[in-house]
Length: 339
Image 1 (cartoon, rainbow, N blue to C red):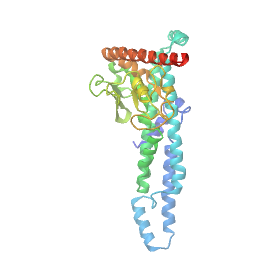
Image 2: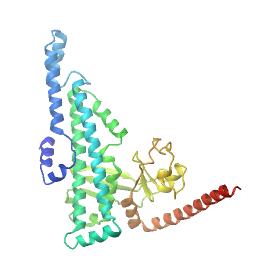
Image 3: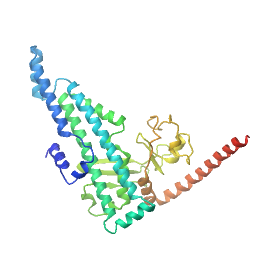
Image 4: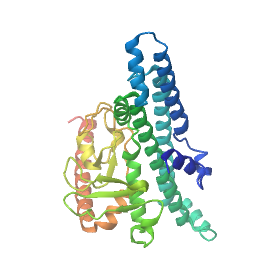
């Protein structure tokens, strides 16, 4: 079955109620734009009386590709629309995963209300099912973007599709490299689904953290359609497994203490206190601390799977935090008193 038919079947499947609330790639519409572009360019070339262009047009028709590598007709409707769709998809995925994980670690009155609901409904199963839907959603749309960009380059004999992928990465909307995907994988591991016999056959795929205690700790995700992803969990500053992990706006993950040190702020002040001109230690991008995301599921995973390491880092971070706090308040006291 061609991907276009598979994608259409997915949009009309059991998750149609979910897709009505979220944006998706208009795959068929974009294919029609490419088809019309190919027809328009070839017909306009044939109408030209220049014999050389006619020969070139015939060759182009036999190759089923457009004459122009960068087509104004395509680019005006194609890339702008695709960028907006990708941005909306990434935003929807982020907000839904954030809500899902918030329910998983709910406290206080919210946890009490959820415990009452469990008397009538399996709340954990509902959360896991929504997680599967989100994984299927992000995977299918990522494949649709990859396929349509490949088709664009085939029609135009260009590399503009690859350039667009780089632009998506620069705009931080590359769907399968979202830190929220790591959080969702950690959520499944924390729920114990990697130990369930039929987990590998679920619509989620497979997730593992077999190398969590090795020199190169990572989470491995095998998504639907056999897409395999590996996320390195090594902090680029301390070169150890991330502890109390935060993902900066650029997507790079660091220990909280390491990221605070790189931004010249104290641990107890947190990421929000970082100056606006603070740069990511890896990509050197400015202004990435203000929207840093605390990866609570990943932190919980480390606490469960690497207990000794987690305890050691916890003692070390608390000791450093107390030391920094004393220095800070001593400086404040001297400033207030005047000496």
